[in-house]
Length: 477
Image 1 (tube, rainbow, N blue to C red):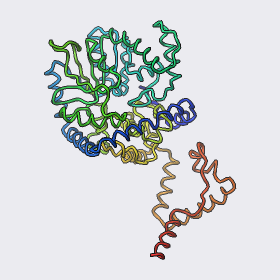
Image 2 (cartoon, helix red, strand yellow):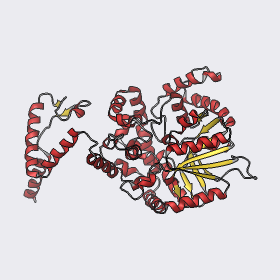
Image 3 (cartoon, one colour):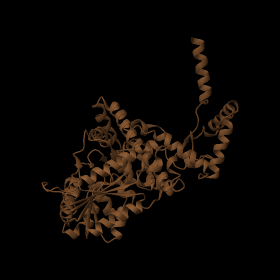
Image 4 (spheres, helix red, strand yellow):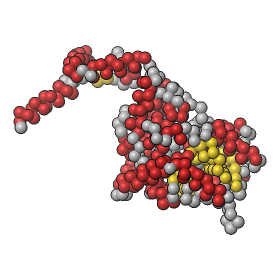
């Protein structure tokens, strides 16, 4: 996927003005939050599980080389093959090579964010392969020629009317000419189209939520069953996963699964949780004749042990997106790459470079809701601040912004002067803003006032009010 992360500000402005997008975001904003809250409340040991999950991931990351090599041995023992890829280009070349060796023509795909990260669809199509996304949300955005806007609900930004128009436009070639609008009818039509694709695919490609070193198994979670059809019907199954997905044992995987669905969709467990181990055996009724696992690094090994190490615990549940006020206002496409929201604002600068994605770490209020709901206890606000420090040190930010920070730091180091100047400023703003009650423009705050009014101060500064309260408390003590 081509990045437009550098254009976050302009893309966010357009998103705020997009009435269709705002309608879709408003409709789904509370859905994920409310369902997660109920699911967590129903599990009293949820916080204990979070702590245990963190310990599992930290142990695995500390011994990542051992568990990856052990996983590879177990995959090979079950008849599969493991391919290692340092870069997205290497991963795509490996997968295209496997497809070409099998003389494949049609590829079905389950939902996979790592395949978006490495731009796999583009590489397969350039090689002359037909690629069909089988997750309903991914299928919708494939028809729309758009990237996903959410890591678990790719088409969350689409309204029902938009989906109906897409299906009417693209399904007529299959003889489906009726313009359907009811959701059950649209789902039925999508199934009708995809059924033939499942049955005729040469290669099925899935991601992997977890890799189990103990057994050499991959785990995928879906609510549609498309993942099962993708990895069992074609004669070749290729799983693509990043290196941090490995966990030591089946028990460890089930611990993480208890957190994943509750955090992502508010379910106790997804409708389909599928464990796959190697290719089809002689006694199996179905399954692929070949199994390949492509392990992707793409900068993750460099994160081990550094200030962004915590990000490697992420299990891609999307809870931080669902609870982020910025994501809730602008949606996922404004972020300009595969991973939106707080987790994307940490990952994208690491993978594409801080210069390309410098706006993203600043697209946060640092309110802390993301860290609060993260099942893996990732300190996302702290990681965003790390990026901001690096941005300032590398002089990636604007000269005006750096000058403003230096000026603020000068006064912040001199509290008495700071408080006096703040009091003068508050009184001036109160005087000039009294008539209208708010400012539509303020020097040095034009980015704020371009989208909203700045309320005129109504009284004293916080410090003045605090001192007055403290004095009154002493008098009344």
